[in-house]
Image (tube, rainbow over all chains, first blue to last red; front, top):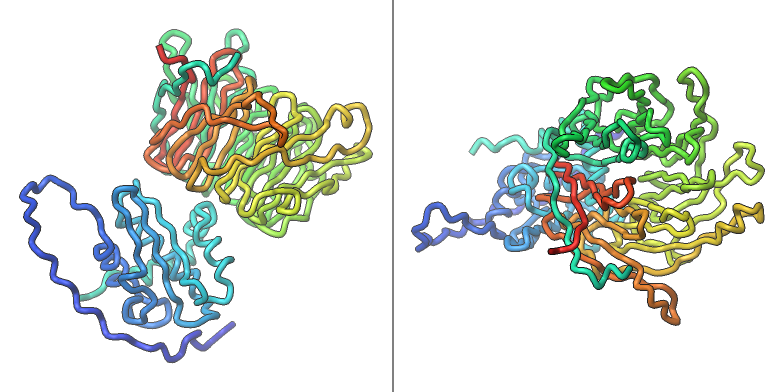
Length: 159
Length: 352
């Protein structure tokens, strides 16, 4: 059993200053605003912390605004994340957290694809396959230990 | 009868609500659909750990939930299959067990629980005579169970060979040959040469025989059993053929060869494909659509080809996990199951 952390000294990046959203001239309050990249990035960056450290995925540059590709019209989102280390075994948990967070935050019509940034992980293909096999994801989320780990990472931030 | 000439439509007959989580699989009772006296039955199984039995009323022709099989499986029920006699229902669950239920008319009783797999059971299938059952699991193995008297089920064989999670098992419709497909991208054919119950892997269909390049989710045979369709995460359907006449007359194993690949029609994983008795292939995919394909009947130099008959977009609100044609004659009913928690019944009909 590994007693030390996988990544003892992560690099912490400053949190991005949030772009001020201009007041929409759309006065129809009932019109649903299309979901965009910034909104999804906010969902992911603020509320998911790394499994090993009390920092958000944004602060560790595991995800950036450019990590998110979204097309609200076709209800597609793809998130590309960069584990802090090439052999990071926490990558599966991070990927699972991202998926669960999106599943809980986006409308059910959304198709979600998660992948690691090309070249950022030793077992990239195997990892991507596992993260996008919904039957495997469903079975994993029925495992109480895994669910506990995921919920730990998805605890709402205090700010 | 050239289906392409007719103006066909897939009409929604009814939406069956009740499950409280995604529905993974549907299975039509093979007997009740055309036996006198008994009403058509459909089984569905779900992430809510239950199985629902739906029955069609002879008066109103509408479907209602006759019974809910609950408090047995402790986790997702992934797949369900009726025995050829229609009297038994097998249910495969993520809890690692396979339940066998007996249909006592108004009630269902759990008569046996098959244990042995190390983790989630993904699929269960009965052979044509109902004398064997097969199950498969994320533990990479395929198990064959012998059906004995007195509700006894004996493990007859544990088949190892797949290198990853096995997604589905399907017995051949006329011969005791077993097929399995997996996360390892292959399809394996298991056969007992001396018919002595000693099953071996007779063939593996992988990229080297024009096989799939990603997880294979489902296998379905045509009525004659000389063709099969497989579907995959690689976004294609593949049609395979074998000279089974030779096998029937004892000439030994007849290998399966790739006939054609249907690509460019799906842009999300295809979870299910089912070949109807009158040769229409239905597919259910992660883009919420149902597609129907038919043999083009214009054999070119390259071999047979298939045409897209129709696409039913947004057949469900979410991914479609299972499509199955009703075994009944002449009615062309299709059942579908989805992540949206619904089961739907469709009718393929000519547009007036």
